[in-house]
Length: 412
Image (cartoon, rainbow, N blue to C red; front, side):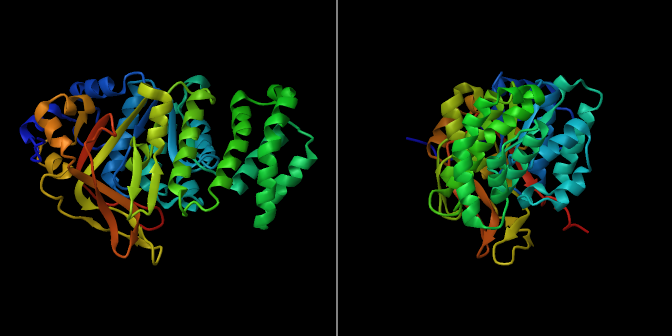
């Protein structure tokens, strides 16, 4: 019979302290060894978060990304944001073009990424690339779905680059970026069918652009297909369709875009293996992580990040203004309660270490609860709990407390 009481002493022995969340602090040898053992040579390493607005979790992920880049040789980073828009961030990180804070502040992107914490991350990436040869630079991708307008812009830029005479396509791209929704949808449907054979017919384009630019252009028809499927992304099945699209885009990065390995940044709900059914989020369906695990097997390694307490940034669904809810005291015997009692600074535990100990396995078999936090506050609620044995992750890191992320334009 499973024991519902957390075995604190055994958990403490299994955990390796990461030593805080400060990105400037080097990870020590014991923690580095545990991370290497967990990550191995995986093609895709996904780093999660309990909340899109938890500053300490953002800083921890920045720290882990530095480790993966500097110590594990990863040269590709991908964010849960618009596939096409993130290319602007890559221009900054790889080439130094523009000002990243201004870019994030004025971008039409999801609010969680308009933060000082990501400015710090991208500034570090730019500094890392300074003076490096092109083939050894850290590159940045987005793996979320894209919009009609951004697809139209990406394809128009590509056809200008290769000096393509494609008047029928150009007409559809104008409609795709226009304000007539019906005409844009018709144009998208036409382009989904027309673009793949068009690229096959014009092999000469390959000599007029980089292989990277060609790969991006070829993938635009898939992005349009995704956008059509997600016309009502908040309706029934929207979560599953979006996660299916994100899994395809993440796989494209390592299968077709030329990246050997990549580290993904996403919410725990997306990178975890399994099915989601969350009444608070109003979301249900197969997760991105479950699809990536099925496709890549051991070459997909998700690392969940838990949270004990503190305040986080969210958006009030009624006003669309910022809110800073407080994480309540975790329930006795829950995962955040147990990890908060370890007296370790930012503990990390590989899944193998959790389930390799009988006492811990017995506790997890009872499926204690962990936090799940939405980015939107609905009727005063944004936090719920999910029963978990942590097998949805290959590793689990824990932040005892956090403050809210520093949202650009909101802070004084």
